[in-house]
Length: 235
Ligand SMILES: O=C(O)c1cc(=O)[nH]c(=O)n1[C@@H]1O[C@H](COP(=O)(O)O)[C@@H](O)[C@H]1O
View (cartoon, rainbow, N blue to C red):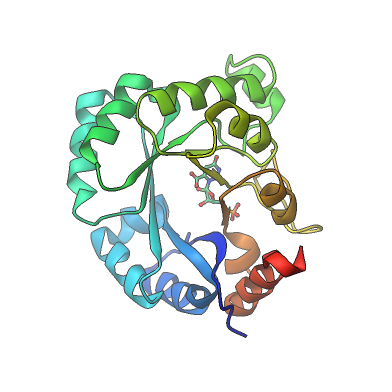
């Protein structure tokens, strides 16, 4: 089954080796818009991973998820180090502050610096413990507004906050939601979650989905099934 229009899904290729990641990218590529290279793969395989995944997926968008978080000068240098890989998305932690987000955005004029607001693995209780008291939504909205003002062109938030973030930042910012689980799927370490259908209905532009696809016996079929369920006529 090949989807004609790729679904607004970024498959998280959290693989232990390049061979596995490339096999997942090849299988899922026809059905999804984006492939995500994260810390596990990048730290093991480096720049080669980006090129290999891009080519195995038939030239799909690449989301480089390095979640940079350091002083502005260091982050700017890190972004310059990967800018020639031309990632469509590159993540930084919004909590690094507006000057850091701005430094990243200036170093990647052609790509979307994507600010991660509050990790989807954090529950209200976790946030309380680390001193971010109050509902996650308050911190997410604040970090979203600051990041966009500093030049971020995309934001990561949980699907539970996407409606409010859209109200906060308007239609032009790409809203990316991990923490997406089909009904009945295992949550694993995710805390603030919703189904793919709900995330899209609430205004997400791109759903990050890893284990529900890559942990399936047939990742290509799992990606095709999710893409079919999200096709405009199916919802
Ligand atoms: O930036 C991200 O992509 C990200 C942010 C966040 O708050 N939560 C989150 O889960 N992610 C990433 O999204 C992916 C989720 O994978 P699964 O939980 O397997 O679907 C992982 O690669 C995470 O690194």
